[in-house]
Image (cartoon, rainbow, N blue to C red; front, top):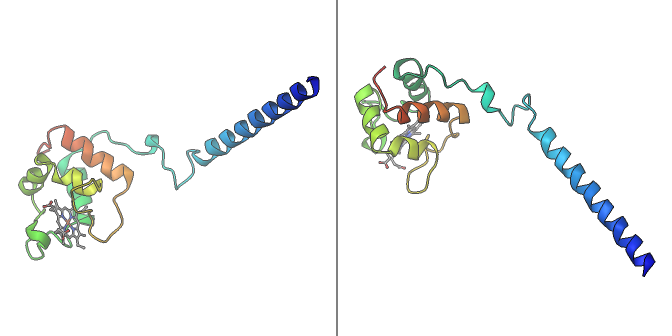
Length: 131
Ligand code: HEC
C-alpha cells in the first residue's frame, strides 16, 4: 500500500514536470522576435486611412485582377466608392479573411498579412470613411 502511494506520487510529480516543460516550449515559440509569429505590438493600426493605408494594400494585392481593364468576376476596386461598396456589404472582410461563403482573396495567392487584415478591419469598422 505504501509503495503504491509512493509510485503514484512519483508519477504525479513526473507529469507535472512534463506539463511545465511543454508549457515553456510554447512560450518560446511566440517570442516577439519570431517572424513566424508577428505580435500585435508590431502592427500599428493607428492612423489608418483609406488614402494612406487601404488603397495601397488593395493596389499592391488586388488591382492586378480588379482594375477597370482587368475586372475579374466583374469586380473593380480602383476607387474609394467601389471599395466602400464592398466594405459596406461585408464582402471585403469576407474575402480577405477567407471566411466561409466568400471566394478567398487574393485568388490563388498568399493571404494578406495579419497586420494588413487588421488595418482593413479597423477602417471598415470605422464605417469605411473617405479619409
Ligand atoms: C489573381 C486574380 C485575383 C486577385 C489578385 C484578387 N482577386 Fe478578387 N476575384 C478574382 C476572381 C476571379 C473573382 C471572381 C470569383 C471567383 O472566381 O472566385 C474575384 C472576386 C472578388 C470579389 C467578389 C466576391 C463576391 O462574393 O462577389 C471581391 C470582393 C474580391 N474579389 C476582392 C479582392 C480583394 C480585396 C483582393 C486583394 C486582397 C483580390 N480580390 C485579389 C480574382 C482575383
